[in-house]
Image (cartoon, rainbow, N blue to C red; front, side, top):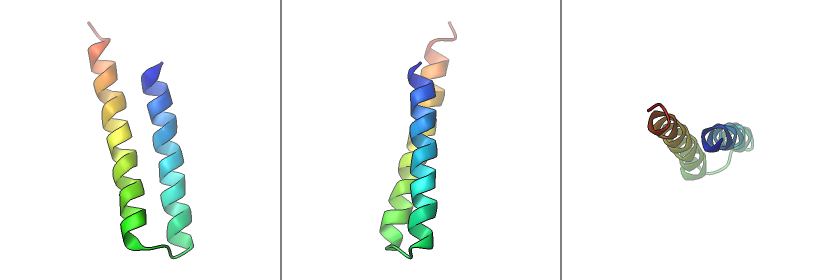
Length: 53
């Protein structure tokens, strides 16, 4: 269940990054949203590895 929530969070963060890019927000903000989305996906993947046993 936690991995599903993390994937949803990653989707929201990607949407925020795209929206901020259209608004011409600072580059560091856009990059940080993409980075956080990637970390959420990595965490979701690692959670699924732990439950595969």
